Amino acid sequence: MKINFTNLDKILNNHELLLLGIGASLIVIQLGVTSRIDSSNIFGTSLVFLAAVSSLIWDKRNKLTLESAFLPSVCGLVLIGFVYLLGLFTINSTFLWYLAPLVSAFGLALLASGFKGLKQYQGELLALLCLAASIVLPKFIFDISPLTAKFSAFVLWCGGFKFTLAGQKILTPTGGIEVYSGCSGIELVIQMVGFAVVFLLMFNLNLKQKVITLIVAPFMGFIVNGVRVALMALIVVYGDQQSFKYWHDGDGSLIFSTIAVVLFGLFCWILLRSQKENMGIK
Image 1 (tube, rainbow, N blue to C red):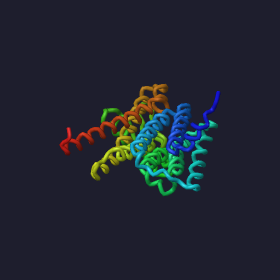
Image 2 (image 1 turned 30 degrees about the vertical axis):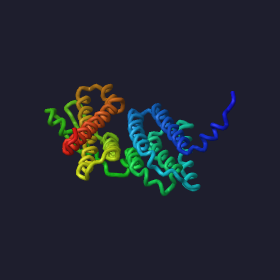
Image 3 (image 1 turned 45 degrees about the vertical axis):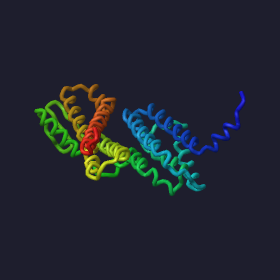
Image 4 (image 1 turned 120 degrees about the vertical axis):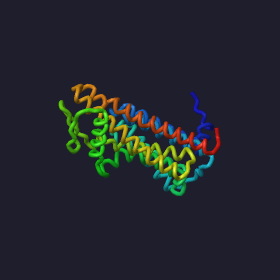
């Protein structure tokens, strides 16, 4: 087998093709590793964010300034190398793999356009920052578990179920649950903000529509998670531990995350349809 060094030289001198290859390999590593991590949420969330950000970059590829210097290129390679090492050793850390897309994108942006060119990718980096923040910020911001418990109790009250609310505990005649920070829904709330950022980047909306979108997205995440917690309280009433584990730790939690995203997608569709009607576009 002969290696065509002429074609290899062309590839190495094609800046755009090299960047595309590195970016594609980073996406493959992210999705490959997260598909094996014991988390029902990280793979699907990574897939949605990476697909959206990749689409945004591809749409404006001809407008990007691809010019970097030695120092930012080295910094970019170090960051990219860090992600490659994570994939090479298949480190099973949900925290690191929520952070990896942002590190990859930041490194790739430095390699492509240097420090001065980072502003070209500020929207996409902000979206991936929201993905990373969904696992990082809950450790530093206030705990919304009491609010989640109150809302879930309200959902149960609307359904006519008997319960007692004691702080973060929802107690029923046959059992009860306590809403900890991990079940508060703050992760989903922050992720929904990231989806909102992606939507705002993809479509040209006025200021009022942007504000409404940024309010509706996290609100939907909070409501959907509150309904999930109320459902788990009902499951405890009927003593079905297997179902409780499914909706708490298993694919059931992913189903509710998907519901939140679908509802937000429906809201976006209605918003865009309304915008077209106001502009007289069919």
